[in-house]
Structures are given as structure tokens and as C-alpha cells.
Amino acid sequence: MSLWTAADAAAATGGQTTDWLASGVSIDTRTIQPGDLFVALKDIRDGHEFVATALEKGAAAALVTHRPDGVSADAPLLIVPDVLKALGDLGIAARARTNARIAAITGSVGKTSTKEMLRAVLERQGKCHAAEASYNNHWGVPLTLARMPADTDYAVIEIGMSNPGEISPLSQMARPHVAMITTVAAAHLASFDNLAGIAVEKACILDGLEPGGIAVLNGDLETSDILQNHAKTKGAQAVLFGESGPDWTLCDVRITGDVTVITAKNAGEDYLFKLSVPGRHFAMNAVGVLGVAQALGADPIAAALDIATWVPPAGRGTREIIVTDAANDGESLELLDDAFNANPTSLEASLEVLAASTPTDNVGRIIKGRRVAILGDMLELGDEAVQMHRDIGQNRHLQTLDLIHCAGPLMHHLWQALPDEQRGAWAETAGELVSQAARLVDAGDVVLVKGSKGSKVSLVVDAIRKLGHRRPQEN
Image 1: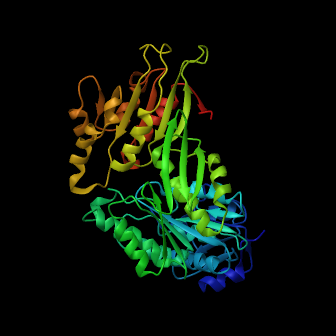
Image 2: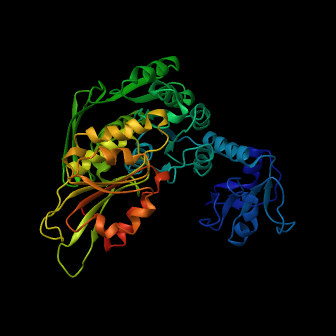
């Protein structure tokens, strides 16, 4: 099935081309599929260097500014003045030709997980299109839109930001019917003066709402008024979720082992449902997802039943068993991989999950199973970063843990503040902890690895996995 004809792509971009049919859109020759339109974006390297490879791998055509060296004169090229702008034009055209109901999601924490939750429930109720991975920036959003089939019923577009002014144009490109803001927290403070500044930027996801659009907002935030006021200025209906949310109310959360049982209320109706992973933060966003599903015209009762099928993407709270010795029954540890991102809000949520976990005694060399945290630096927190790391020591969930290892110069401030009985290893970089993996953890432990992506604490995750035989957590 064709996604783009040469004529449609040329009409959308104003480019010059020959005749071809594309079944997909790709920006990476490592994952390109036969029939894809290859988009030669400029990043660390110029995508034009890979056009010949893309065509050799079966690309239907390439979106370029010129014919690159080594590419034949009769190669199928769509030639435009600016490749990134042309990708945006494709996204705008794809959005215009579909009757899909569109949801856009942003927030300081939980964008990708919430996007995947929403995808999981909507794909049970129609043909659903959503971004791969966390494609939420100036090229990720148009790429997601450009990949959207015309016959899509629902689409979920994730929109992120690092600096002011990034969200509004992406929202205006996506033109959502419903926009959700998961939370506003201390992330990217290096680019903003305060939390209110972050809230103002997050609220800009409402700028692109279609007439009669709905804003699904976290009502528990200290900056909630900023979000609600922006919704009013845009003429959007505000639907509030959270413990104090009058529309979708989170009444109770019970974390039991590897599941989260949630009680919620909407319009006098009670909802009792579960997630297949532990986490109060997941529960909060799940209630918001039901609000988005309802606002899109989907069935929220069916969504509440289907949301149990969702599991977090890798590095965002995935839970797995590492069998350290297959010959000895039960000799394993439990790994919570949350190494993709970190800020004080998301770290508190992860520590709560770890504190609620149950280690296993009498299977390891230390005999007693432990709750172990391995923490990397939280980045982009601005001038208060040192104090924010030091303050983690006062977290009530962290105080219940048995052992805390730290990596990075910022986490050194937490490590210094820990009592002797909790203080584990510290290293300047996460890479230096890799060789110590076997000594950091033991069979019977439940181990959380958490840090910003730039801290590279995921290296420790990989090292722990290599200690044994990995298998997913059974639900």
C-alpha cells in the first residue's frame, strides 16, 4: 500500500521529481525498509552522504536538495530547497488528508510512556498511528505525521521541548483535537527561569488545538492555573485529572508486587482497573489517558480494561528478572530499568516503586535480599542542581532503601549526604561502575537504575544484564 505518490509528495513540498511510490518514510539507512522515502536530513552528518546507500537498500526515492555525488542522474529524487522544511510540508499534508482524531501529549515527565499507554488502548478501538520511540522534536513530529496513513482513525503525537518556543509550532503542525499535559516539573530548568516558565511553554501545546478542542490537564500541579488560563485564552474546554481533578479523579492507588491497582471516578462512574507495572506516576497518567480517550470519542470503559496490556518502553521503568545462576532455583535479581531520563519528580516516583518492592532472602551470597538504587546525575536542572541532588537524601522512600550507589559529580552530593549504612559505591562516571557490577548487586536484590540519558547510567543496566540470563517480569 502506498503512503506517498511522487505527485502527492511533489505537490506537498513544491519539489521536482520523477515517478515513484513510497510505502514509508525513513531518516536512517540502518533501519530503512524497501519502498521507503529516504529523507536526507542534516544532523551530526549530512544525510546526503547516505542517499546512495538508501537507494541500494531499496528506497523508493530520496528527499534531497541536490543530487549527491555517486548517485546516478536517473535516480528517483525529490529535490527541494530545504529538506527539513519539506519534511514539515509532508507532515502538514498528511495531517490535512486524514479524518483521524488526533491527540497531542507533552509534559516534563511521562510523555513517551503516556503516549504508549494511549496507543495501547486506542489501537483496540480503531486504526491507531503513533510516534516511534520518543520522536517529539522539530524533526520527530513532522516525521511522525508524514508516516501517518490517510485512513488512520486515531493518532497520538508526542511533543517535547528543551528551550522556549519549541512546542507551539509543532502543535500548530499537528492540529490536535485533544492535547494532554502530563505534568510540569523541574526539567530543563537550565533553559527557563522557574517552574512557571516551564508551565507557560508546556501550555503552548494548546496553541494548535482544532476549534472545539479539549485540553486534558493535570489538576494537582502548583502551576495548574497557568495551564487552565491558557486553555481559556484558546477557547478550549479544560478536562482536569488527578487526585484533586474534578473531571477524572484518582481515588486510590495500590502498588502490589508488579502491578498497580487504580480506582478512579468520572461523571459519577467508578473505574477499577490495573496496570501491569508498579508506579503511582503511571497511575496518574493512566487516569489522564482515560480522559483523553473519552475526549477523542473512544470508549473509556473499554480503554480502562485494555490499559493493562501496556508495558513501559525500554529504559522507562521496565521490570525484568536477571537469572544469575540458572543451575540454582531462584538465584536471580529483579532489575528496574529507568535509565532513559531523570529529574526530581520522576526520581521520586521511581524510588516509591523500589521502596514498595519485595526482595528475596536466602538466595544470594549476602543472604538478605536488598532494595538497591544505582543513581546517575540528573541533568539540565540549572543553578539549583547541586541542592536538588543533595535534597534527595531527605526523600522518605530513599530512606527505606538498603544501599545506594551513585555515579557522576552531581550525585556525589547525595552520596556524601547518605548515612554510612546506605552509602555504596561512587564513581565519577557511570562507565567506571560497569566493572564493579557483580559487587554492586546480588541475587535476591531488587535494583533500580535511574539517571538522565546523558549520565550514561544505562551502561550499568547493560552490565547487570550481562551477569546472567534475562527474562521479562511475569505478570
